[in-house]
Image 1 (cartoon, helix red, strand yellow):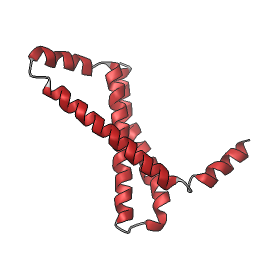
Image 2 (spheres, one colour):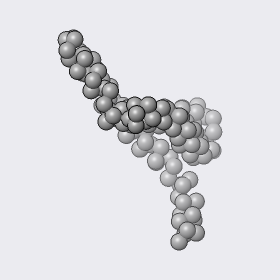
Image 3 (cartoon, rainbow, N blue to C red):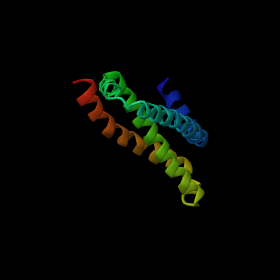
Image 4 (cartoon, rainbow, N blue to C red):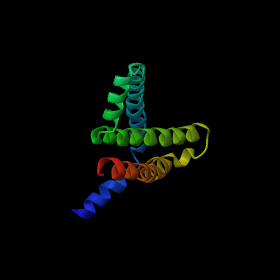
Length: 127
């Protein structure tokens, strides 16, 4: 069972990396666009000091902090995958674009995400 799983992972991890990168870029881009509209709408509604304080109280809630962790994941994935796409379009690493996806966008992205998400999780959600 473990050998067949390893074989399947080795066989398909390089084959569909470009399509996976395409969908990650599109989905995170739409998520960031939705966040941008929500952010602008929230900031626009904060003319009243009571509304502003209510918004600050809401932003301090653990559920909202988990949303910030999701936002961090979207920003990291979108930006590193965008860097990979830019490098490939500029002609650097065209033959290695799949490896760049797994090592740069996913590997480095996971390290950056963990480095950013742990302080948010530890100091605001779990406190």
